[in-house]
Length: 97
Image 1 (cartoon, helix red, strand yellow):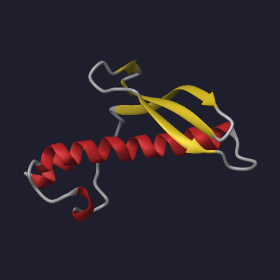
Image 2 (cartoon, helix red, strand yellow; image 1 turned 90 degrees about the horizontal axis):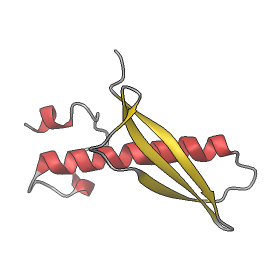
Image 3 (tube, one colour; image 1 turned 180 degrees about the vertical axis):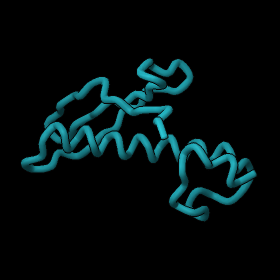
């Protein structure tokens, strides 16, 4: 199955105590004009490489978008803490309908 969306790193900012990674969703290799870029702030880890921060930021951005999608599909349903943690981003609305 071909991926519809891909999260790509658009920028990295270094600060004394943290790293901020800007992650953006792309659709078919093009920037999404409907979904926002997200800035993920990560605490510095001794000896960590930029690839580590990029991977962690993509993981957190994916979870962010999945939580937003789940919240929109749930409407007035249970709080995010009370719903199943594992949701597939593309199947969220189908499962709750």
